[in-house]
Amino acid sequence: LEFKWRQVWDETGEWDMMTHVMPFFSYDVPHTCGPDPSICCQFDFARLKNQFGGCPWRKKPVVISSSNVESRANLLIDQYRKKANLYRSNVVLIPLGDDFRYQNELEAENQFVNYQKIFDYVNANMKGVSIQFGTLSDYFNAIKGKFTPPILKGSFFTYSDIDEDYWSGYFTSRPYDKALSRRLESVLYAASTMGVTNEEVRDARRTLSLFQHHDGVTGTAKDHVVRDYAKRMLDSIQNVQGWMASKLGDAYAPCLVQDGPRMASYNACVDSDEVLVYNPLDTLQNYCGVEVPGKKTVKSKIASCDKHVRLSASSLQFDPKTGMVISPFKEKWMVWKVRKGGAYLFFPDQDAEVYARGVTVSDDGYSVTSAHWSRTIVEREDGVVDFIFETLLQENNQEWFVRFETDISNDGTSYTDLNGFNFDTHKYRPTLPIQAQVYPMPTLAAIQDGAHRFTVLSEHAQGTASLKDGTIDVWLDRRLGQDDARGLEQGVQDNVLTRTKLRVVAETDVGASGEFKPTQRCQRLWDELNHPPEAFHRTHRTIIGLIKMWLDLHTPL
Image 1 (tube, helix red, strand yellow):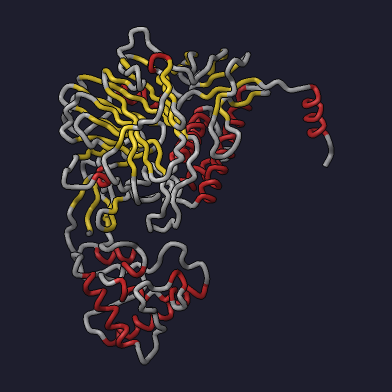
Image 2 (cartoon, helix red, strand yellow):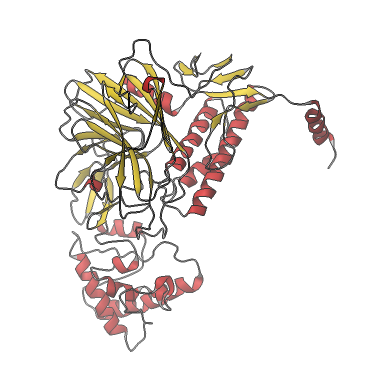
């Protein structure tokens, strides 16, 4: 439970981090003093008058006094000793808090005064025990040099807190908002390449940072908080776009717009007379048929960006009835139907089903639509295909994903990125439940054998799995009608129309030995997906509008 955590990129251990894992169900007071929550809860003095729900074990906290301090101290220290047996040293860490705690002086006073009475008694009367308030730094300094910690390397996904409750649902919850945060990140990157100052984008960067909260980007906030995040991010996107437009000239406006928070974006520049397209990367990019050199701006007229694209020498083949790709790999729209689970937890109830709703196939399979699910294919170059999905999940307790099936013999091994830079290796284990084998996919999932590699890139985060040989599953959305008892106290039912672009990259002769690493070609395709060109069109101001603007500028305050 205490170890040095070595990062996958660290070969020498220079950046090892001393790590402590709490051994019980949660980090709240009932589950941190020892193995018996019915006892530990009695020492959460914020619950003295049934605040925070009281103690569900029907044993209330009591105020510490001279008449009960001995018995109460013995009861508490017994839990501390039992917890200490799980660790390597004679120092034990007891967290004292929870979410939404210490918001008033009375609560803090109740905790401090009652614990201090226990501490004073223990330190004066119990041999071999010393107890005090402290910080995390105090704890780590106290255990330094007391033992030689083991070294662990890699990530710890997927987390579980009890039984088969694995926290793999939040990898996908609220995918629209995960995508919106990436859009903000993308415009900030583009503005930085145009010379924006830290001061000019300070507020936008703070908004992006705020959304990285563990209940923000995870999609595990209450509905009204989700809406507030979305409004803040949209405002920031528009402000950064406004700065970029001003640098390109007078009277320009962004092409990619949306009419409100949590609404679908659309391209307002189709058939515009004059469009300026800026490429933030160093390499050539294509924007809606317009080639833009690295770090350059090109003036052009663009066609629709949402149409399918078919290469003249395409190798794709489609099922004429379903429109799904059947060669050189297979595409399947899939649904998990669940009975429980919520924003955090994924609980598959039965085998995944093929999405069997009526579909309309057009453009020989390059475009497929149904009532709430559509897909358009854009072929980019040999072996590279974009799948553009639009989903609007309206039925409770369903999880939608796309499955790609290949001939690759990956022997249960798959790969994901951890943060866009480092990569994790996963091994399918038949002894673990399915929910334990879904992993976060910030940008990439891949499988490979000695001859071939199949990579799926994404422009936003979601969950992924490789549950059968040669397959990659990528989640698109999930809707849950109930809470999963992890603190949110609601389901996830605020689904909106969500666009997900997945870029499939098929490669050969990539070298399957050693640590997984994307090829240079795959890295370029990743860069282009996450940092696309930014386009702007000239607005047509009326004479009345120009006069009003002149009056606003010249009217004294």
